[in-house]
Amino acid sequence: MALQISATNPEHPALLLELPWDLPLEEWPEEYLVPLPRGISRHVCATPGPATR
Image (cartoon, rainbow, N blue to C red; front, side, top):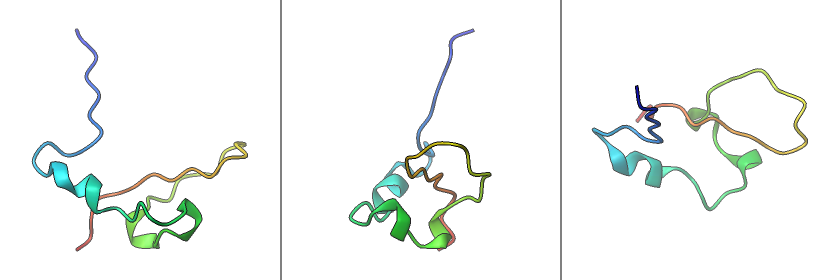
């Protein structure tokens, strides 16, 4: 079985473009993020969730 990775919803491919890419991740509004446990990484990581608009 071939591995298939999708970075966006195929039904709404433009949703990824609507994220606030002009802001640093630390400043992204909560509505765009999924709460996940914080790891040991020193880098800021964010997991975008489904749009609530």
